[in-house]
Length: 297
Image (cartoon, rainbow, N blue to C red; front, side):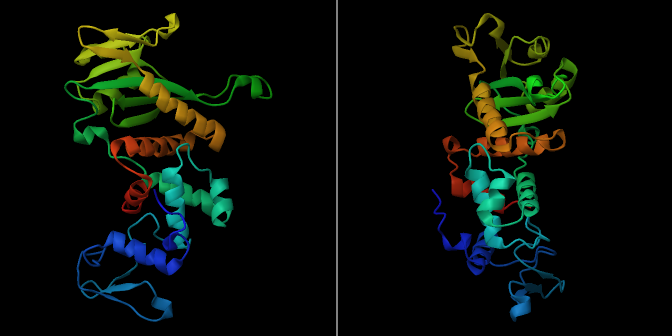
């Protein structure tokens, strides 16, 4: 657990020292050319600056990070990273605006910069989710307002989300225009290992797709079936983990953000995926989660 009263969360010099120590534990190197032949510059106007003796470029601990070209104090960046990475259901820009004492415009900028840093590596780069003997649950949900709350009762503009969740592992969520076999299949075959056992609901979107994987089992929600034990494989068939993930996501959208635009939906998915993929159950605590954000460009 991180002590939010730590000096680097409230003092600018301590924040700069913390970031420098985190970024360059083995000595400062130039982010432009990689040289270790650097010197710290002096004077009030050059405080925090380094000069590379090889390429003659100046830089600070912000250079090449999500904090680059920002005039927001470093200690407020550190606080924002900690709050967003440790708040299970998210932290709104309005809440950061009030807590950090920055304008709403600055808080909005902070939130989206941090969300971009939360972008997880594609599962396809590491062979895909799941694998031999592993289960990947696939489910979809819809984000948007209810028709009864709209002035003229027209259909609510629902946004579709598909999530691939490895049991006891990672999640990868995607915004899709609509949930059809044509839109969902390319995502699943790219990001899930063909050796995986798939578990879905009864939707016919997954029927033919399931044949391309080691096995495919489905629960029939239409008949109030939510889980059953499959004797041949010795596994419980369900998509309860994906539904639990969606319950946190929906509570975050409804209770914290209230509404989100389609243009930014993928960024909010990055945020919830990041916290799930770096959760305590996988051995990542709040301070380590924030440290991961700090290390990303």
